[in-house]
Image 1 (cartoon, rainbow, N blue to C red):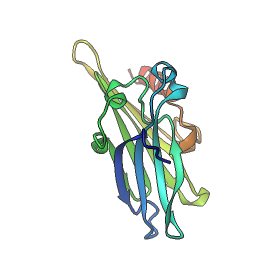
Image 2 (image 1 turned 45 degrees about the horizontal axis):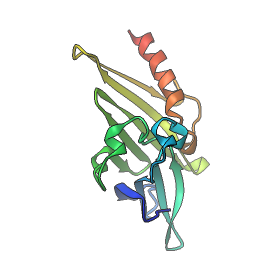
Image 3 (image 1 turned 90 degrees about the vertical axis):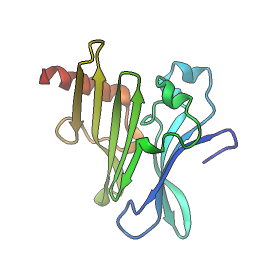
Image 4 (image 1 turned 90 degrees about the horizontal axis):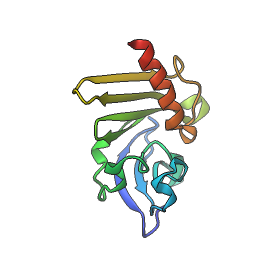
Amino acid sequence: MLSPTDTLLAYKAADLYSDGSRAAVIVVRHQASEKSDYDFDSNPCDLVVLHQVNGKLIEADHSSKAVDCTYNDVARHAPAMSLNDDLNISPGSITFVNQQRRGWSSFEFAWLKGKSTWYLHRATASNVDSENNGTQTTISYPKDLGWTPMSSADPEAIAEVLEKQGKTNQ
């Protein structure tokens, strides 16, 4: 799960499953490669959900794209544990906020007990233009998004839906 060259950027623990078991969410940046500078499929950061099973914390789910370390210089160069404020967790909910130079985006994942899976519940983008005018667009499942398990969340596809929704709201 973690190698000596990895950087732990965030860690939060909670009763995510509302069952009294230990659980945690971590954000890990793996060693960057030349390809990770321009290819989001090589994004070096992971959001990982850990759940205690039989006394051991195991990986329950992950997203290799919810934390942007390819196009986001803040996360790409963040020191250890410096993204803790961007991670919020509570029973049944995990939210990560990607801070950017002129705005932010967030992904909120929810736990669906019946399917025993984390899924993308909501995505939000907030941008400020050169004249300091701000816009914020939010999309959610099932209104605007199809069923998207955490491990399948694709920010580029989500950005297209957010952009389309933003134009509809103007």
